[in-house]
Amino acid sequence: MTFAFNSYNVRMNINYITSNFLNALVRKIAEISDLVPSAGLMKGKTGIAILLYHYARYKNEPEITEYADQLFDLAAHEIGLDFGTSLDDGLCGIAWGLDYLIKQNFVQADDDILEEIDDALFSSNRTLYLFDLGLESDKGLYLWSRLRFCESFAKNIWQKRMETCINHLRDVVMLKYVWHEVPIFPCKTLIRFFHICQKFREHSQFRPKIDAIYEELSEIVKVSYREEKSSSDKYLLASMFSEIPLLKKCISTDNIPQSFQLKDVNNFYLTRLILGQNISIPKIIDKMLLSITEDHQQMDELLNQLNPDNGGLESDICGLAWAMLQWRIDR
Image 1 (cartoon, helix red, strand yellow):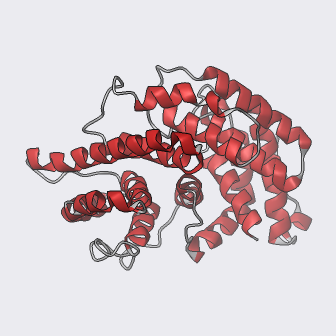
Image 2: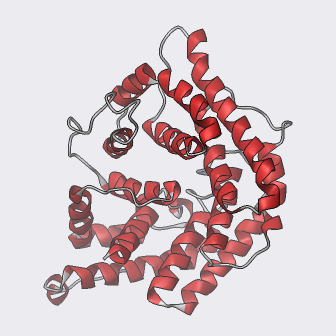
Image 3: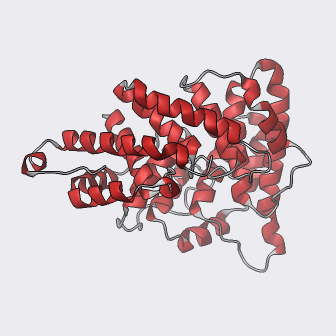
C-alpha cells in the first residue's frame, strides 16, 4: 500500500492529513500483524493489539477490532513460561498487556488467565536478577497494575509480593558498594524504577524503605543522566525528579538539548502508556509530530518499509502510529 499526496492534499488541514496517513498506516499494520514473530509488548503482537483496539474504538471500526481480537488470542496462546522476564519483550510485558486490555474493557477474560503467569513471575524458584534493576522494575510495574484491581481476599498475597519486590530493588541499589565505580543505568530503567517506587511509597508501611533507597541514589542518577544519549529519556527522568523532594536537585531539564528525533517523539507517548499516567509532553514534540506527518516522502517511505520484523510498538513506524493516534485522541 502506498499513500500518495497531490497538490490538493498538501493544501489540506493538518488534521485531515494526519487522519488519512494514520488510517493507511494502521490498516497496513493490521494486515501484517499476525505475522509478527514476537508476542511481546514493545516488539510484538501484544503491543500491536493495544494500538488496534484503541484505534478501533476511536474510529468505531469493527474490522480493525477483529484484527485486534485475533492478535489477543494469538498472544495469549503463545505465552510460554520459558519467556524472558522483561516488560519490552518478555513475560512481564505480555501479562501487563493482557491485563491492560481486560481493564480497558477491550476484551472479556477471566482473571485466572494471568494466574499461571503471576505464579511464574513471583515464584521464589524463578531466577533472581540481582544485578538487573530493569527487570526488577518491570516486575514492579506489572505487580502494581495487578495490585490496584485485585480482589480484596488476594490483597495480602500481593502486598507480600510488593514487599519482596521492594527488597529486590533495594538489593540491586545496595550492590553499588561492591563495585569499584558508580553503576550506570539507562534513563528508561530509572524512569520505570522511580515511577514504581513512587507508587509503592503511597503505601505508608513501605515509605521508610523507599526513602532509604532514594538516599543511596543521588550519585548513581547524576552519572547515569550524564551518560544517557536519549534526549527524551533525560527529559522524562528530570521531569519525574521535579516531583520527588528527596531527589529534585539531582538533575534538571534546563540543559537538555532540543534535538529530538522521531524515536524521541514515539518514546514520550509510549512512556505515557507504560506508566499509566498523562505525563506532560513538551510542545516541541507536538510540533515535531506534525512536521514529520507533513513530510509526505518520509510517510510513503515508512509505509513501504513496514513488515512483520519491524511491526512492534518500539519501531519507528508503529511507534509513530501510536503517537499520532494519542495526539488525535488528546484533541
